[in-house]
Image 1 (tube, rainbow, N blue to C red):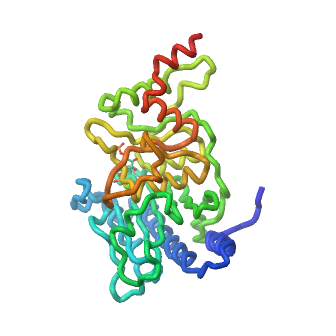
Image 2: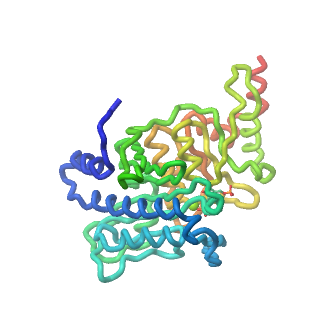
Length: 347
Ligand code: AHM
Ligand code: MG
């Protein structure tokens, strides 16, 4: 076991040393971001005491009521990131268009997208919520003009960094820059994120599925067969799977990262593209899961290969242990059916 005490700042600095050409700009960007996450974590912890629960009574472009903490988290991230000179543009779940860098600040070569507070419907009941982010290089790094929508609409495989903070029984920060997935746990007594789980790997197969099964009747029949299959006992005892669903994507994916299994937000008759947004929710989570050895699919192919056409576009998603994601794809593509599996097992 590695017993070194490593703060996130030291970890970022050590990782930077692996890139001799690095200027330090990216490290400074991450440092500013972790400040924002520390502030949000503090406000989340005290929300019940400080009039931060409840709605702003504003409805955002997704048709959802903006909670006070959604607005606060968006604002904190903006104020931490707008003046650092690292970013040329941002996009957020809580902003309809591009989030521009004010004209009086220098613009940098990176682009950041984020969901300031994921799991908004869980806020008022003190259930785990999170913040999701990802960082890209701008398309033409030689420019110092404002970033454009094309800079935001990059496929997920181009992310240079992806991560999330999960405000659960402790606050953890999970991120990757392509050198594995590292998890840091926040120690509130010293105000530091400390490396607690270096180089996390997702189990190749799990025994938990995570989906809002209330929509079962609205799903494609092939998905219904897959979930029925997961719930049907198998002779080898591998099934039935357990069902766990928090209703905060960050929390459901975090559990899936550690325990394995599959997290799904599929298309349904009432939501033909699913619910989750590709750019600032699904892609960062997909990058983390993929870097940890898992898979992320929209049912037909790799999530990270999709070229977005809209900042707020939605996508169905299936992510988690590689074998579980491959299995759901086989059901969705008609390669497996519940009946076939039952026949094989009864032989
Ligand atoms: P939010 O970003 O407004 O909180 O919405 C996204 C959340 C996800 O965290 C979660 O996976 C999903 O909505 C839950 O939706 P549902 O209530 O339909 O199961
Ligand atoms: Mg969200």
